[in-house]
Image (cartoon, rainbow over all chains, first blue to last red; front, top):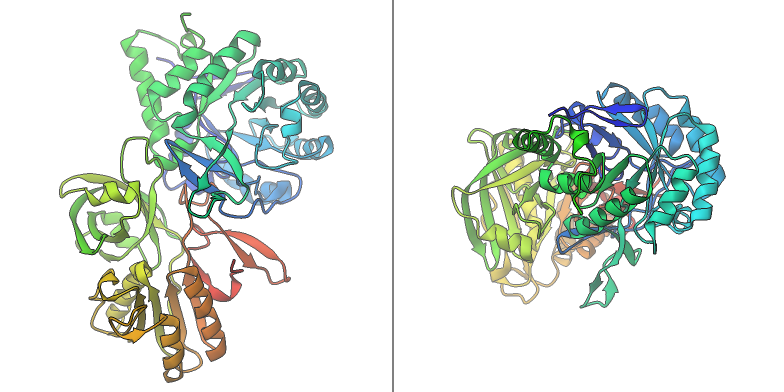
Length: 302
Length: 265
């Protein structure tokens, strides 16, 4: 089965990518993952200024998942370009930079800085971070705000523009529609679900931020449902994620309507997972005599 | 920074060394060859999804020749419970060696002092064994709740051990840091103190080191997810030269820090 997929004008070797926030800037995993074998990866969010992020504890494990409240800790766009780009240039796969901010101006500044750089395959707009008050969720939870932001960004870049959607909304299809109308070339979903864990002995929240974003296998059915719903609503490629730990999980997302998938928390558990999923997809293709991966996307029988 | 490996390691031995404390020996040749005292391994205890994340442990000892790595662990939850039931011939996936490890003493550094509280002995033990091979003497101050709570008793031959227990059932009756304070004058000014244990103990160790003009290195524990510096989950608040603060990652810039740079809670 042919595994190459198209995301707008960008072609990926295969549909298996790694999610923002779980792969650093790529080089962190260079010892353990064959980065060049990936379909691509999404960097840790980059903001205009460096950010220290939230105080600790920032992560806690929950049943079949984890909560995180990192708070967009990152080196800022200047250091990103100076220190992180050299690895990205030579890593041998498509790299998408996740962009976050708290004002339209901040997002536009970062996008303008990155637009000039050829080695970046595309931008993923983070309008869905649940852990920072000014982390863009104001844009991600209101269709009007999302549209306004994305229109401004669209004016400033010709790069592939992906908008990453939050599941923490009443109707994700409203935001999806607004994001596509405003010029997004693709959508990625879902970001983490707001969650909380309590230490019953101390009666304190387990995270310093009180709440965090839930990821891992626990959220997979939510992600699959949202991909399916959004696939009924818009006509751009979807990048599905949430709890993918096997080729079968990836196939659920593809069949529900995703063209590409992102591994997130799963990469922490098993850095060999991308390769296993790629092999598993090939085997599925052979078994079901499917000649191209794109034939699987949206093939759900309802 | 050392290269990380992901090895499918056979369990060679897994036995209880004290109440609820286990020592597991793994066949993990690449990690055995490269791990330094103070570094960690991340063990995947199950292929199921709960518990999900790998568990970080200090390396207790290695045998580079035989390709073995030992980990001492306290059975405190689901993950370590599963690990304690692994038997010879089973395999677990192990990532490591992660983190920076202990800085080794300079040639002109005075005495080597180690301070361990309870399970804090795990990385300290590896350091002591390492120093044994280098033929350097080390003094160990080792505290636990009572005489049966020391995770391991045999810590080597080149080491002079001072025990302390909360109830006085072995050695000094009281905090191990008070024991160290009482013995401090036998160590010269340019000595180095390696500490691992409860944070309150390590914070006190920094005070003792300051009073005696020693260098102090502490090994910190945090919840960790990736182990390679990617997720930014395991942060430690540290002082900057400009008088501000900065978050550092325990899995990457740590787990060993210069005690003077830590902002204690």
